[in-house]
Image 1: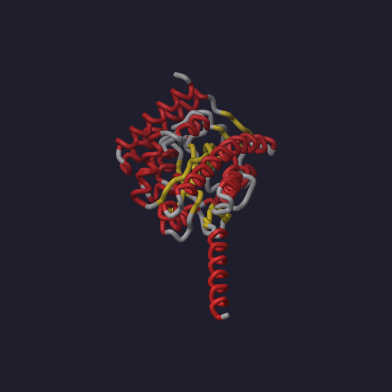
Image 2 (image 1 turned 90 degrees about the vertical axis):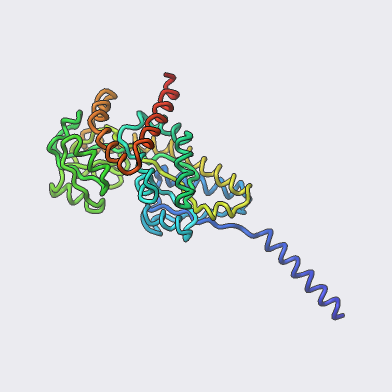
Length: 339
C-alpha cells in the first residue's frame, strides 16, 4: 500500500511537471514612452504582439506598456540594463547611448518615405545596429518611420532658407537642431515640449519644427499661422531588445520575434505615411496656412543646412561614418528611382 501511494505521488508529480513545462511561457515587456493612440507606431506594436503570440502558440507573450516606464530615454536605459526586455525608441535618443547613431539626424538625407524604408534594410544600417549591440548590449530588431519634421511659425510662409532669417525658432535640446536653424539665420531656442504651446502663445518664439502628427496631436496648430511641408529631418524608430534576453530565447522564438518586428515595420510605415497626410489636411481645415515646398526649394534648404550639421556630427562620430552613410543613401535612392 505504501509503495502504491509513493508511486502514485511520483506519477502525479511527473504529470504536473510535464503539464507545467507544456504551459510555460516567456513574457516580454514591450514599452513606448508615449500614450496609447491610433498612431502608426502603436498599431505596429499591437501587430507585433498579435503576430508573435499567434506564431509561437502562446510560448511568447508580449505585454505592451504605454507611457508607463518613462520617456524614450528612460525605456532605452532600462533595456540596456535588462530591467525592461523591449522598447520602441528613436534615433535621437540612441545617439546618447551609441554616438554613431547621431548620423541619422543629418537633414535632407531622404527624398521620400519609401526611399527611407528601403534604406532601413541596407547593409549600412545592419552594420550600425551590430556595432551598437556589441558596444551596449542593445539589439535592434527592426526600424520604422517616425516621420518627416516640418516648420511652423506665426510670421510668414517659409518657402526658402532666406525666409527663416531673423525668426526665433524653438528646437529640441539638441545641438544638431540648433545648428540646423542657425545655418539659415534663425535664432535657435531650445525649449522643452511641455512648455512649447505657452511659449508660442506668448511670443517667446515665433515658430518650431515637428512632424505633422505632433503638430496636430499637440494642438500646436492653434497657436501657429503658417506651416511649411519642407521635410527637413526624417525621424527613425527602433525596436530594441536586451541582447541577453534575445540570446536566451530558442532559435525558433528568435525568428518569430524578428518576423514580428518586420510586421511592425510594415504596419507602422504605411500608417505613419497616411497619418502624416491626414494630419496636414486636418491642420489646414483648422485655419493654418499650409505651404508644400517643391523639390527645388527643398534642395535649396539642403544646400544651406546639410553641411553645417555634417561638420558638427563629424566631430562626434568621425567623417568616415558620415561619408559611408551618404554613399549608402545615394545608392538606395538611385536604386529606388531606377537611376
